[in-house]
Length: 167
Picture (cartoon, helix red, strand yellow):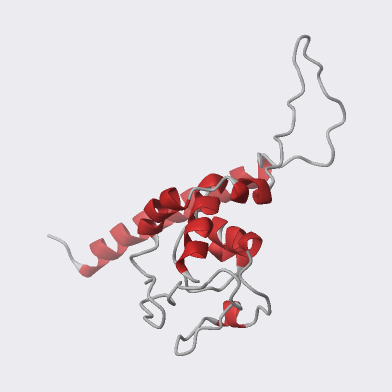
C-alpha cells in the first residue's frame, strides 16, 4: 500500500506546506508590524479627560517608624522555607539573626552567589527593602529564587521584625 516513494511524497508535501506557512507568517509580520515608525505627530485631545496624577512616593523611613514587628513575623513565614533565624544555622539561605546592619554576604560558612558577594555595602533597612522588593533586579544573577515582596508595608514590617531578633 505505502512504499518509500509514497511516504517521501507525503512528508515532502507536509513539510513544504509548513514552510510556506512559516514564510507567509514572516512576510506578514514584516509588512504589518505594529511598531510605531518615529514619534507621534499629533495627539487627539479628549474633552473632559483629566491627566493622571503621579502616585505619591512612599517614604520608607516613615513606613519603618510605624512598622509592626508582629506583622513582620507573619510575613517571615514566606522566608522560613529557606532561612533560619538562629545565629549560625544556615539553610538554603543564610541565617537572618542580626541581618539588619550586617555587611552583605558576610555570613561565614555560606556560599553566596557572585552577584551578592561583589556588593560592598551593609544591609540597611533601605538596602533590605530594595532587595526584598525584587531580588533578581537588585542583584542580577543571585541564586535567590524568591519573587519578592511588592507591598512596602510588608517589607517594612519584615525588616522591623528582623531588627528585633538581635540584641
